[in-house]
Image (tube, rainbow, N blue to C red; front, side):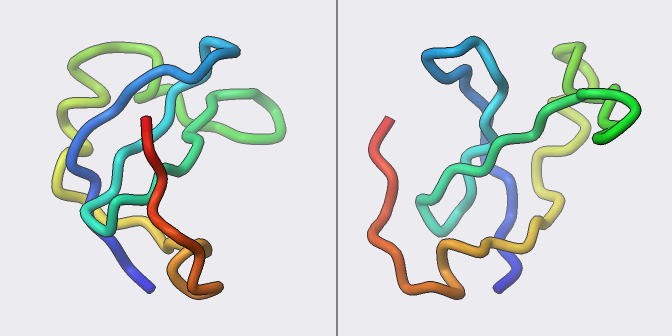
Length: 68
């Protein structure tokens, strides 16, 4: 299911998590060469992604909402 990004926060390991409108979180790491998301490294890059959609696997699996 597609869900819009509404914000971001860091987890206990200091990795960025996208907060989705479905109330699930999804890690959005920049870990080259495996994952290339340089936009996660700046406040402006993350702000530019607000409103964009991600595929929420947790919704697809009917998981309960995340609490952060």
